[in-house]
Image (cartoon, rainbow, N blue to C red):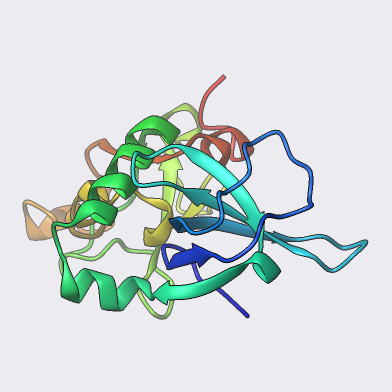
Length: 186
């Protein structure tokens, strides 16, 4: 079965796979935070968070769907899994500071076609040229839940004549691995 990010799953049996994280306990429910399919064996490993925000793992063959992310948000918008996700994000995300170019319509000048990603320039790589050198595509699913609104609405130009000019600095939280991979610190 295929699971998506932030789905709630129930563990039906103990996994035989090996990893540095602790194994998920059969009978318990967990939230999927990421998944990885081994190119050698084709096994999909699920990286999970328990209700306390602690990491563990299993394989997809050892789990069954309990609730999809969209349905649990409707059923319990302030429930235990929303809090677990928040704890996990607080522990695994770090702030980055970037800029982009102002747009008079409120969206960054350079966005993806579906407007789910923004082209940003980390402060340590900033250039006034719009030639995209040193920039990074930042998808809103990589941003801490509490910072998505800041990312997507930080581009309204204070004055019409500022359209196309570099924006003020914006700070949002992203996963540490994403920040490292894109050279946003260090």
